[in-house]
Amino acid sequence: MNRSSLDRRSILRYGTGVVAAAGLAAVAEVGLAGPAAAYGWSGPLGQGSSGAAVAELQIRVAGWAADSASQTYVAVDGSFGPGTAAAVRRFQAAYGLSADGVAGPQTFGVLNSLEKSDGSTAHFDWSEFTSHDGSGFGGGNVGSGEVQENVRRTMYKLEALRKKAGGHAITVNSGFRSTSYNAQVGGASNSMHTDGVAADIAVSGLSTLSVYRIAETCGFSGLETYTVSWQHVDSRVEHGNYGSGFWWWQDGVA
Image 1 (cartoon, rainbow, N blue to C red):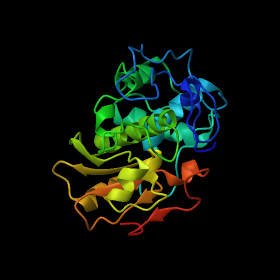
Image 2: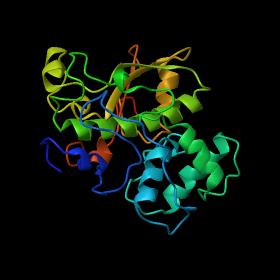
Image 3: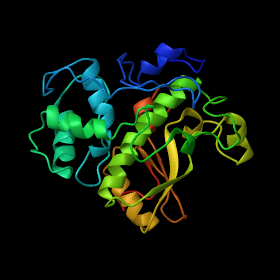
């Protein structure tokens, strides 16, 4: 995948190269998304399942990658393996469901309750992640449609972090940045913010150290130091075509 602008269908192309029906009405520019029904899961999904619905499931449970600090993530590859099953079990347990690792009607119901009609998630809005210079999702290192899909994936990880944090509200201080705005604030030219795979957050009532520790379980491969007043999280390893092939937890395991 290159850094050129993508068309509407390219929104359905995930970082691993899986092309799938993403179950949202996301479009190239924020604010233009029309009403969308909840994702239409066609039937139960378990180990051995594959295809578009599995890729969508993986996006939605990606924040449940681990029980404790672990440099691992749920690959969005459309193939339901042990890692996906473990993430589904954690998600089910957190929401009071039978934790059998098989996604069925009850699991789908909870997953869909976290989806808003415009493709964003229950506790996050697209506007929270747009570039602060007014460019929306445009002007980044990849096309605006790809940025918005990357932001959607980040939202689901943050939904998991919020749940693990006891439902404390999350403030997004910085989400996507256009390359010009990123330069203005002194960001690195290859900042994960310019691709839409990063967020700087604060969690109400929690120290940055506490947020860092929770993020260690959510599949984030980039964590900035917890010694500042915000917590940077990103998914650089999952997006190796424009990200990084190595994990960067600045303070190691906290």
